[in-house]
Image 1 (cartoon, helix red, strand yellow):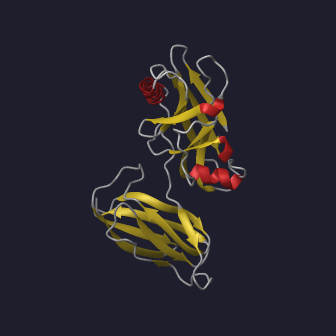
Image 2 (cartoon, one colour):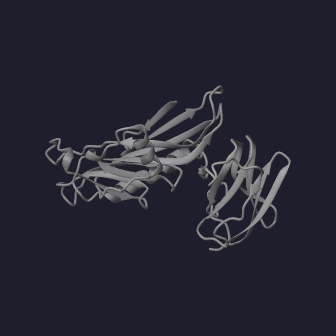
Image 3 (cartoon, rainbow, N blue to C red):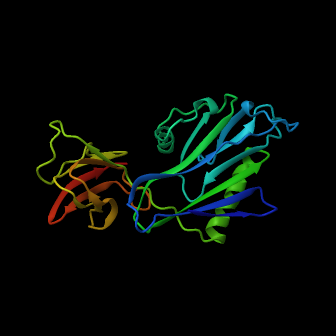
Length: 288
């Protein structure tokens, strides 16, 4: 991993660009999350260090958390926060110091957003975690993770700093887009605890659906699997699965979006499962 930091003296923000590359000899990473953790302590008006009385607020439709001092003046409230650039689908979790995760499982749960959200209005020594995913990385593949950190005297100015940071990243640096979020593939045990005997693609449920539907399939042996969504014109709109899977029963959710994360129009779609010479199709009806 490498990083670059960009900052201008006249600006109230900095841009941190993380470059993450999976070694060419490593095993592929599936369903992983990128995260940016911040434990920000904002001093009182007299610059005394009292982290236990900080609060958390949110800007940019909840995508940009910030921390400010509880006793600061209403008309002059210094704050410091962050936002992942290039997405409006970040996972934002905040908590007080007493609720800090104590193991890897706890931290991974926070990355996924599997945690009770802390009420930022309660004064505390607060911290937050911005995450993005899940994504998959093949050996030798890279991903760029851009984060803007900004300070300001009020929420409107903070949001403005983030707009400037986004513009600089997109227009000035020509920064690459974030790697696409991949749907989470779930493997589950059959009631008999026996492996499937044949390839099978089941009807999705619910159908018609809104906002999402679940697609199930069985794989009797380890092999490359491709599960793709097509529109009624036969055009590919999204790859849900494209990797080798172990034998087992799987399910995956589709939320009516394409590979770019754009919401598709209502209508009929096809889910096509390919594994070796096996091909199966089911019809899905998406209603908005």
